[in-house]
Image 1: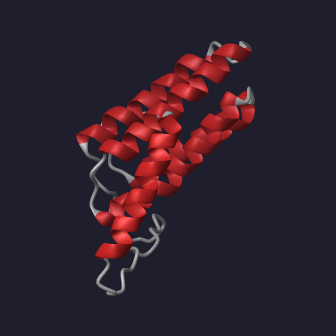
Image 2: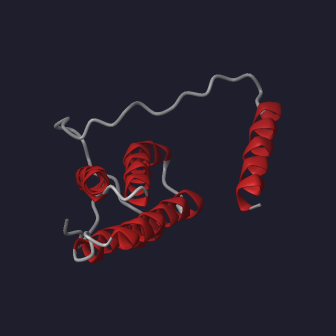
Length: 144
């Protein structure tokens, strides 16, 4: 039922957006290149910081349980829930928002690998994404 409601909401939002469009051209921000010498890290919101720390802490907790298939799958669900919460609550400026989305997408893919019981593949994807977050955002106290 929950999935059905999400699908209906998503379709409603798409129709609403299409009806609201004034035929102006909407352009996504240019991709972020953190290797550019002029790149300045984005400042994460407090909500984003809390949730990214939650993902990091879940992965640290999982390290000791990596041989427990049920725990790996359960942690995959927990990580996915945190990412979904980020999408619902996070309010970043457009360039920062565009920068975080690929990393969050890869964390979701990693969480789904965990849910399938594939610890190594899931961990790799999530680890790479957390490193990318570190390169893009100035998160005081972030230790990955």
